[in-house]
Length: 180
Image (tube, rainbow, N blue to C red; front, side):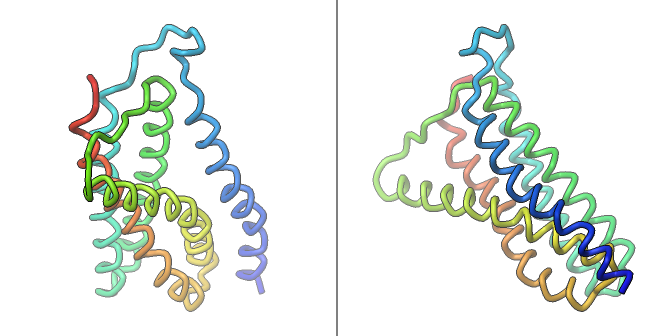
């Protein structure tokens, strides 16, 4: 019963964060400090850093799954906390970059353009969907409701991995078009 109370306690926060994070990111994405007259340098050095963080997140997620399958729950827990931290760091840098820099247009043509936009759109949609999934999965682990945790983790893991990997792919595909 105590575990159920812990889950219920966090449910409100899961809903609030699952709605607030995408809304705040979308709002801030539309705010360009330089266009508003603020004298800020464009943070054009950030895209390769946050793409690398996405790559690290993917690796950490895979290592975390291997850790739990090898009976190392404490290592799994620490790796998952690292993955969440990486995702938060990515988000902060992503928003900071877009608040100080002009958006880069993809310059590819033909079929590659459609491939890029398919990957980008699925990446964006799933990056919104993954927020509540990660939060629910994490809370169920905190509450030590491991049967429910494992059940949702089987859904969360591949989506989160896809988001992390496609974040790197999107960066690699658009990086030739960045203006530094």
